[in-house]
Length: 451
View 1 (cartoon, rainbow, N blue to C red):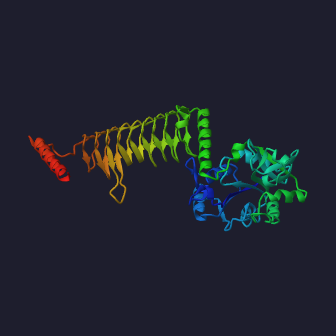
View 2 (cartoon, rainbow, N blue to C red):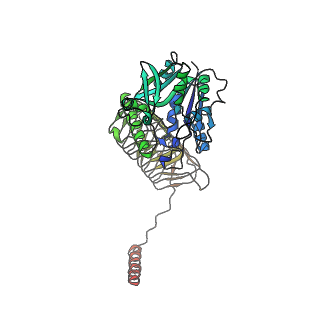
View 3 (cartoon, helix red, strand yellow):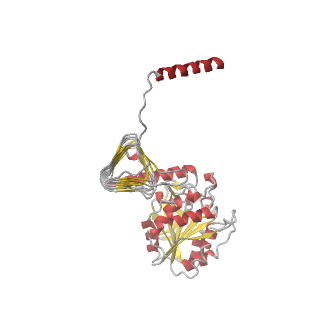
């Protein structure tokens, strides 16, 4: 069945106390809107339409980053959920299929739940998504007669008996596109807020003799984000689920509650993750790797058998081949570390390529930035870079070459050569004592003047 998604993302989110649109606040290092869009994308919809309003250009930019094929429409005035959905009318004017309405601030809806809503459309004109609430509070109640949804009653309008109902409205629905927009055109705003409510389509559909039903999902899928506290809870929910999924897939998390994952984190089986590791966006770790404690990874790829950390940082563009070692207090950025190479201690390798089985000594720095541009350093296979070497890019060190400890390499080093580039050591007998005596005298005078 053909399906189009309409994702409502126009609200300001006043309770967030932020200049950022609510749907762009991150959960697991991705805008919460991305969670909703990625769930919907799993259904391969014909159209994905995002309704933006507050800070619409920022929302549009985020949508384009998430799905370049999605369409953004504007709700210039926030006049209610039915009014928001109606902004997609022009895009879908000739569309012959179903529409599923989602919310950009409800990030945990599962794809199989949407599929069940679509499947329910085969026997109903309109499908509402509901959930059994542990604490129904002020949710709208779904009044059912068997599998038929009779009406939605808001808490403030509910009788004492109706308030005892725990089957509640999530606000999400599925309906034939033409029918949905026909029903929306009949929604009025004769209410305290003078808004056009999407829930009113249930009563309108019933009045036309249409069959309306409800599909149930787990309450956790309907978790909405309206405040910073909600945002923190949502992130905790994501992390808990993502960690559990990794454990199920055969990844060892030595202290699961201390590992922070992003929405797009991919980790292969038999990888071991030690405590206090952060995975930023864009990280793939292949099977059998070891990520040691207190490491931070983002925008990088770690191959099978590689060892990272402890206290390592892999930045955007870091590419670690199989069986590489990146050790403590090492930073890698936009660099390829070839198979079997080692960067074990206190080094920075940026805008570089390091050949197979090369060893980078402690304190090595690729000096890649001249204040304006970045430059590349190329280090060949089986090379040995001595401790505290500065490689001033652009520069090339050949295969099987070596640099002496403390060298400042400004020229290419040919294959098999030893490069020594440091100032000669000069010793001045007795000069250290004289210098220290002079400094002590200056300090004493300064302290006396100050008093």
